[in-house]
Length: 133
Image 1 (cartoon, one colour):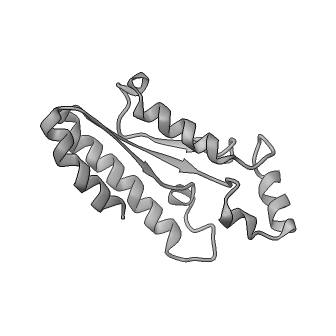
Image 2 (cartoon, rainbow, N blue to C red; image 1 turned 135 degrees about the horizontal axis):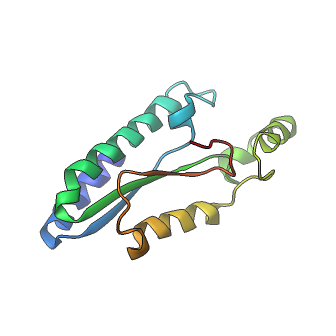
């Protein structure tokens, strides 16, 4: 998964002295398990820890490593929620809507851009204000 992808690109990025790695996590990595799958939250916490560890290790090679932690995005997973669950989740989000895949994509594009050249080791929350830290 995430570790293998990072490992696959890190060597090339080290050689060129530059690179951007953006891992995809989840709000569950910070809140704990919020789904019915007990391994989901802990696996995303692992992605967050890996992101921060690699950011420290790879910075000396000009490589930025960051992550994006979405919550409640319009996806196939959210399409399976009951209408009641959907209303509960939307009510818990200060912006009062689900996110769009484009919201996540824009965050990834920013972190992969030169505008984020002094950002590394960050997990950018894309959650409509559901978690503010």
